[in-house]
Amino acid sequence: MNHTLTSLPVRLRRNRKTKSIRRLLQETTLSPADLIAPFFLIEGSNKKIPIDRMPGIERISLDVLLKEASWLHERGVQSICLFPVINPSLKTNEAEEAWNANGLLACAIKTLKRELPDLCIMADVALDPFTLHGHDGLVNENGEILNDETVDCLVRMSLMQANAGVDFVAPSDMMDGRVAAIRRALDQQGYEHTGILAYSAKYASALYAPFREALNVQLQFGDKKTYQMDPANVREALLEAELDEQEGADILMVKPATLYLDVIAKLRQQTKKTIAAYHVSGEYAMVMAAHELGYLHAPSVFYETLLSIKRAGADLIFTYAIKQALTEIER
Ligand code: PBG
Image 1 (cartoon, rainbow, N blue to C red):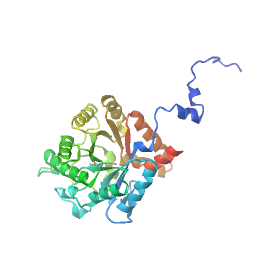
Image 2: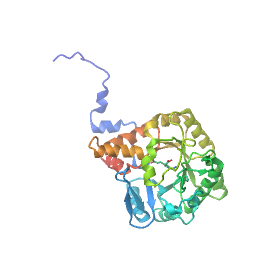
Image 3: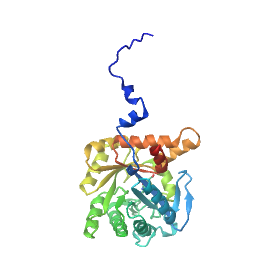
Image 4: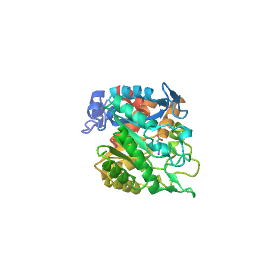
């Protein structure tokens, strides 16, 4: 047969011919050390409580968490992030439980550091698991979220976590000036080696709904739009990240991840700092729901998703899909 294409000097398909060539030429790779596992922690022992809207993810007690964290660490995962599920009787308007030095979170951090000293431990810094109203900050009688008063609480919370031995505090609240205040307090108290992973560009997203079920947090009024960012904005995200960097953040985060790949890519151009992205509960839940309907294969979708988040410019990814991702990485 005579083909019209007798000689074609550029044939990009040569570079896709075999699995080994494809691996050789891969521009982006995903490895276990890129991934951070979020955990929902509950009181008690030997407890696992499923989360309806997050199939495959459970709220677990510390003994179970230790086993899971150790399993992940053996497979190359280097960090976990803790989210405590707070007993409703401990919630108040002032969120005092957030800095309880003998509370669920403090005990978990201490035990994890003792049992798995080489694992990097992060903990979320925000008031929503601890407030009756479910907002991330203190609220005045007009329903306004108070910035500076909230920052004082976040500082206390960060000091408690640093004292318990956390490697990074991760403020997820979006109050102004919190990174500077936390950095200053940590340094003054001798915790200059405790890092700050700042949720720098955290959007007011509808994708956090399953997470709020996991933590039993129901917003009693309003929404989070006076502190979390408008999804319409990208220059503002770059400004938030720039300020957090100036204030002393060690790692900058964009959240959610997949709908905000442009934000990650633009931040990559702006900063030399490490960028983290949070592949959030809703991003996990949508894929799992489709998987359960037989519409797609969740592990493959997760692998492609996480790879794309890295390709956009993220160095680290918080993800609930960590087990599926590890299986795909090992294949
Ligand atoms: C707390 C916090 C939230 C998430 C992480 N930290 C919820 C929120 O801001 O409403 C969401 C994570 C997820 O959806 O997986 N401030």
